[in-house]
Image (cartoon, rainbow, N blue to C red; front, side, top):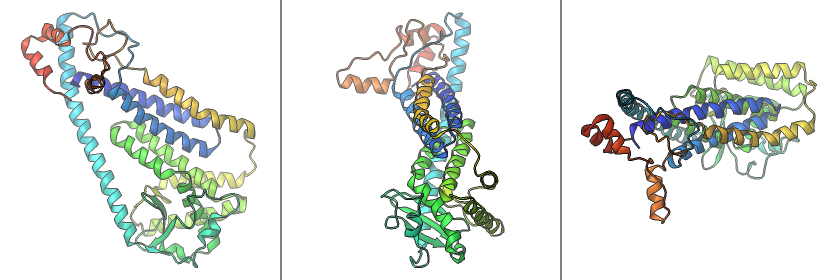
Length: 384
C-alpha cells in the first residue's frame, strides 16, 4: 500500500467510524431499554472492526468523481503532498497503535497478577447463591455461584469484575463488614456485568481504541458505552423504590471511601470507574426513586424497537461503508470500483481467482508523467 492509498484509507475509515458511532447513539435513544443500548454499543465496536477489515482487504465503490482532470503541475504538487502526509500519518498511527497495545497488554498482565494476590471470600460470610437466585435477577447457567470466583483484597476500595479465562468478582475487604442486604446490591451489579457479556464488550472497545486511538468520536463512544453498561447493571441491581434508596446509600458510601483512601483501578469494569460516571449514575437513581412510575413506551413498542435497533445499526454501517473520500489524485476516473488491494489479490490469484489489482491505466506511467524517472522509483519501493 502506497502512502497515498493509506491517506485515503485512514481518512475514509475515520469518516465511516464517526457515522457508525453517531448512528449507534441516536438509534439507542429510540429505546428506553438500557440492555438494548448496551448491546448496540457491543455491535458498534464489532462493526467498526469489520469496517477496518473490509477497507484493508476489499475494493471500494467510487461514488464521487476524483480530482481529474487537473493540470499536470497542480496534480504533481497534490500527489507530492499526499505522499509526504501519508508517510507521516502512517508512522504516527503505527507508533500510536504500538503504545496503545502495549498499555493494554501491561494492564491485563497487572490485573492477572493482582487477582493472584486476592483471597477467596468465605461462602458462609456472603451467600452468592442467594444473590444469584434472587427473583428477577436470575443468572444464566454459565454465571452462577459455582463458576464465579468471589475474592477480596485490602488493596482496593472499589469492587469490580473480571473475566479472562474465568469470571471473578473482587470486593474490598472493607465491604465485608457491610450487612448482606446492602452488599447484595453490589454483587447483583457485578453479576449483571458478567451475565450480559460486558467483558467481551470491553475487549472489543479496547481493540477499537487501539486502532482509532486518534479519533475523538471513538473516545466519546467509550464514555457513552461505559454509561450504558453501568445504567443497565444498576437497573439489574434494584427492583423497588426502597431498594433504589438503599442502593444509593451503598453507592455513596463506597464513593466516600474511595475519595478518602483511593485504591488502584484494576478492572475495566470497576464499580467506581470515575467520578463523572458515578455522578450521572447517582442522578439517574435519584430521578428513578422520585418518579418510579413514570410512564414509558408500551411493552409491544419497546420490544419492536429493541428488535429493530440492531438491524438499523447494520443498515447504517452498510451505508457508511460505501462513503469513500476521493483523496487519491491518481485514482482512475474510468472505473467505478477501486482495484483489489495487492495482498488480497495475491491470495485470490493463488486460488486461481483473477482480480484487478491495478488501475485501468498504468499507475507507474502516470507517475512518470508527473514526476519523471526518480519519483517512479521511489513510489515503486515498498511503502506502508
